[in-house]
Amino acid sequence: MRRWLPDQLLALTVTAVAVVLHLAKVESIPANRDPDAWSVLFTIAALAPLVVRRRYPLAAFAACFPGLIALMVGHYAVGMAPLGALIAFYTVAAWGTATDARRAVGVLALGLVATALARPIDLSVEGAAVNGLLLLCGWVLGTGTRKRRALHAAQVADAARRLELERERASRAAAEERLRITRELHDVLGHAMSVMVVQAGVAQTLLASRPEEAAIALGRIAETGRSSLEEMRRLLTVIRDGTEPAGAATQPGLADLPALVADVVAAGLPVTLDPVPTGPRLPPGVELAAYRIVQEALTNTLRHAGPARAVVRLRRTAAAVEVDVRDDGRGPSDAAPGRGLSGMRERVAVYGGELVTGPDGERGFRVRARLPLDGLPAGSLARAVPVGELT
Image (tube, rainbow, N blue to C red; front, side):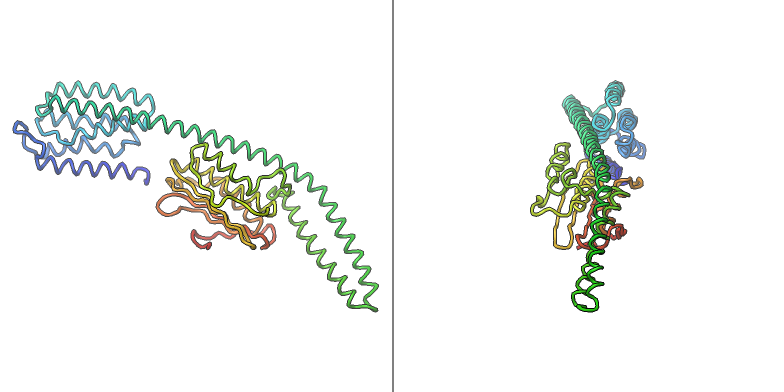
C-alpha cells in the first residue's frame, strides 16, 4: 500500500486542482460551454487513471483519453485535463516494459487522431506544439529512467552473485577448518588431562605436609579445567554448526570490511563506513560474525531497498564490538523474513549477544548487533530487543 501512496496523492491533487480551475473558468474562452456536471465528470475521468499509473501504466495511459476527448466533443474548456495523458505517457516509458512503451506510441497516435476528429475549439497551434514537445520530453526522460533502473537491477544481481560466490567459498573454508579442529580437539584434551593429572598428583603428595602448595596445585587444576572446557565448547560449536571458524588466515574479518564496502559501492549502493576498522584484531570468530552481519545487511539493502544509501558504523570497547547498518531505502516488504536474518541471529547467539532488526523510522531498515568479547558462553540464545534499546 505504501508503494502506491504517491500515485494516489498525485492523482488526487491534480484532479482537485483541475476541477477547481475548470469550475472557475480560468482557461475558458467565449466559445466554450459553461462547466456543468458532465464537464466535471469528464475532467475527473481524464485524470483519475493516474491512481494506477505505475501499477498498470499502459492501461492508465489509454484510460486518460476518453474523458479528454469527451471534453473536446462537448466544447468544454479542456484546462488541465491533458496533464493526465502527459504524465501517464512518461510513466509508460519509465515504468512499463519496452513492449508497453512501443504500444503506448500506437495509443498516442490513435488519441491524436481522435483529438483531431473532435475539432477542439480552444487548442491553438502554439498549444499543440507545446503539448507535442512535452510528450517528446516525457518519452525521452521516461526511457532514460527505465534504462537506468534496468542497469541498476543488473548491477544488483551481479553483486548478489559475487557475494553468493564469496559466501560459498567461505563455507568451503569453514568445512576444511572443522576438519582441522577435530584434530586439534585431541591435542586440547590430551594436554588438559595431562596437566590435571600431574597437578592432582602434586596436590595429593603435598596435602598433608604443605597444604598451601597443595591448594595452589588444586587452583591450577580448576583453572586448566575451566579454560579447557571453554575451548572445547567453542571447538564443538564449530564442528556442529560451523559458526566460528578459527582460522584467521582463511576467514574475513573487520579489516576486510573496506573491500566489501568497495564491492557494494561498485554495484550501485553508496555506502559510508564509519570508522574504518583499525587497531588490534579481535578473536577470529567475533571478527567473522561481525563481517557476515555487515555483508548480509548490505546484500539485503541491495536486493530490497531500491535507490538508497547505507551507513555502516562500528564501535569497539573492552567488553564488546557493536555493528550498526542503516539504509534510507523503501523499507522492508510485507514478505516473511528470509534466511539472512535467521543467519544473523544464529551468529549473534554463539556469543550470547543482542540483535536488533526492523524499520528505521518512516523509511529505511536497520540492523544492529552487539557481540560480547567476554560475555555469555557459546550457544546462548541472542536476546531479541526492540529498535533503540541498545545504547
